[in-house]
Length: 199
Image 1 (cartoon, rainbow, N blue to C red):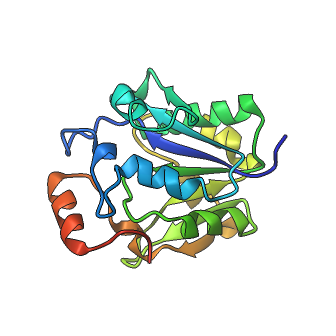
Image 2 (image 1 turned 90 degrees about the vertical axis):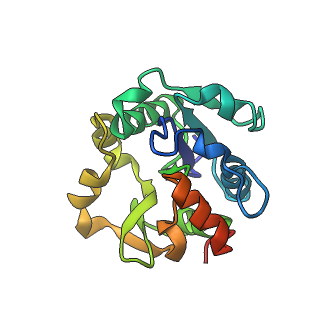
């Protein structure tokens, strides 16, 4: 088994508020958001990168390199929790990575720097903290949390697991992590912001 962490890019949702495939939003650096994330991730020592897709599987698969597996999750409509559980099952089956990093696919300022910090920082529960005080992905989980990840269901993500293990959690600074792409208004605000990658 390769002990370098694996990376799961979660891109299975319907983007109901964006009303289109937000992973194909063009960023200020001229790249599709999903390709920007992949380009940053490829510079980091991940043993494997998987993209978990759903409603927009074909659109995403059409723009990413064939070397990166786009794995269609047929039950994507069950929500983020179910999608994370599906990813955790792949992690278990493939037996790769001492830890797994879970990244959403709508943070346009994600960078090699923050992903590498997650990989090299010791600890098996590492979350990011944004400049607005919020905490969230990308998040690294060690294998002792995999059984809990496998139990997730519905729309809620892995926040409950983190909250129940705060004494074990480490926080990494990701100031611009609060910038996301949930709505067309978010996208327009991002384009005007001048952001390219994380601070």
